[in-house]
Length: 310
Image 1 (cartoon, rainbow, N blue to C red):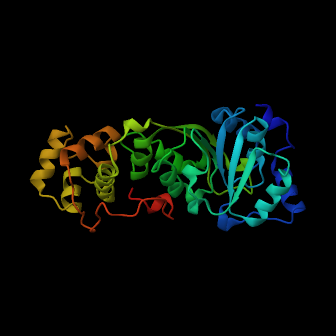
Image 2: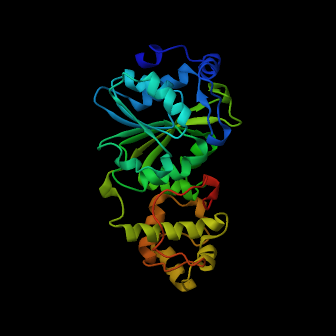
């Protein structure tokens, strides 16, 4: 990965000097922790496989360390940066880079799926407080990325890639849309300033469009069912659904039997395929006990993963 080696030295001291020379400091309110480890950078590039002609969306480019490596590999990069001062620094640094398009704004407000013509990839050191809504935006809409290589909080990466037995709403949502794996763990010392948590490089490979449910209404039924169940993920599934859905107990019993799911299973033990079978067996679940119907807003939501039903 020559792109990682051809730029300036990357270490915490070098990051501090760049910030000092530009009159900047990391902003805690924007979760700014800048990558400062060349080995981690190379790991990201190995997973992302940037090449001449590839199109990449980068969210939160920061000081442009990852951006420079992607450009050096020949990729066309569209980078979304919220911080005005960092955006100015990036414009100056990459003034002659004809393959970089800088979008100054909030990634949560951008139509991320249509910034580039497909196929495109997403490669980003994500601000951790927006991980969940960004994943909902990128995976819950089309055209979806061909691949996502993301630096995220370790706890969130492990939740996303969790096997049945440790599943959460976020696990099911992501694994319904994509194959998920953790490429490597990243210690706090790989960043400047050091975050209070460990991180991980998460790789997502979305499934083909025809692997999904046939329409938005069917997906809404699925997510309403799963959200209701995960409000009590450690309780028996039959009892949870009776409490959370406006359906007779007999209907839920028949659906569980039709889907070959024991009624005493816990929501966290079900794989994506079992949720699909249960949703098909139940059909229209109707509004849940909180009054949620299929007419809910679609798109990114401004919350952390902890705001999801677990």
